[in-house]
Length: 304
Length: 322
Image 1 (cartoon, chains in turn orange, red):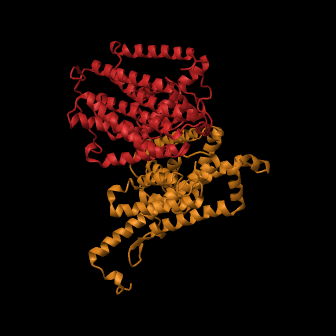
Image 2 (cartoon, chains in turn blue, orange):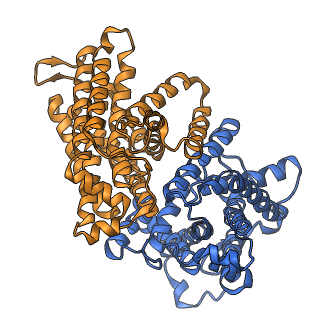
Image 3 (cartoon, one colour):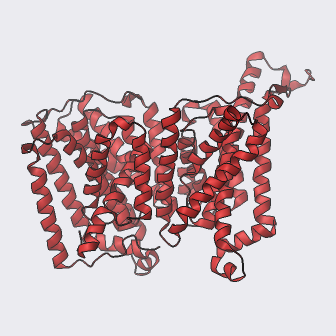
């Protein structure tokens, strides 16, 4: 590396402190990826089903556990888990939608919240019974081990992969919904399901698939986080509350809004960890309060 | 917004009479508990949770606002009362006042923030605010983090009544509960309560009739939080500790569950629901995490099959208002 550039002529202590800052920024970007993937799923589901999916955190956890089972029972590796886990959890979600959530159509929003909260308790309770509360290790796949020296910081390859891959998935979802024919049907059905049905489109099936898609995104985030955060039954329980705050800040009206807010809040959280670690748990909630005081409708959302 | 209680009956003299009779029966039944050999600690715990659930029900059942963060009032009042009793050595009555006042202040602040959004957002905001407080209490020195405040002295109420005697303590909790219950009952049936119900049914129309609905919702939120805090302060004397459990989101979930089981928007539902859930936890304690699973199943069953709750179903069957 060009060691003669003025940036690198600083003292060792300064450089170390900058290293710590970059490391926290990276952690922030990773958390931001999870916030983005989860809030994106929540927004898509809310658009079609008018339900805030409280079970989202539990299904994220299930995604990580499915990856763990695939590896430790059948010896199926990470790359297949990345594909299979969202499909398995997505199908599980679609069964939930067909057998329960479907019956909430036309009822007050809050019943959806209560039902999915109950589902979250059931899923998390069952996993806690069998696996306790401690974490199970999930190793980083061989291809993504090690790190790169970027000159200003050391980047573990897996962490870089999580950020890039999440970003690609988020943008692909945005493209699917905003730029394809299927997405157009979806957006139309969000606005006026009856009219879309009159055009001969099977809206109930689309609702089920949407729930499967949203849940699949949560499971994908779960697989991505398994090698970083270990696999724990309660890994999604606290996360989902932060994601709710993210959703309140960003609003659920816009897909791109969810993605940007998710990443931005992750980065802000990472910076807080560096500059004022005591507030790193609370900074997202404090920001939510500030946004509500200044702009009650949220940054991108329409008034609800 | 579709109505929560699709069969709310108008407040007729007959309904009022029914409810007062029920209140009398409840008061008498609870008053004779110390003479029956039922474990008073269990009933006191039930009464504290019943009061929190009633306060919560004031918001959801009559204002249509689902707060998913009511544990913050329970926990805040508990911590403040415990601190006042143990560190400041205040007498019991002042400890209760400090705890309740803290919950009231918290209600004013959090209410101002959370009523800015409606419906589902309101629930998410209250949940996030209570999580914010959870992390604050986790780190604040005066709460003693994971240990909580323990060994709280019960003292003598007004310098006369020795609260370390279970029977005396029981009657203090009972009187506190009944007084707060009557206050909630009066609120529901006051002109204020009628405006609240109209906001639940159709907020736009209430606004068009000239009501400042935000003020009504804020006031209801503060009242609900204060009463939940009052219950939290009473609970300190029963449990003799204040811990993080009372501020955790799972506690907020339990408060919602109690009200849902008993019947959203019914007068006596939260009381019945609270005793059902507290009893369930007592008897199923040995099953470990399965209690969580069972609670989840009850949530699902209530939402899909018994949306009126226990008291709501009974009232519907007899076509009475309870």
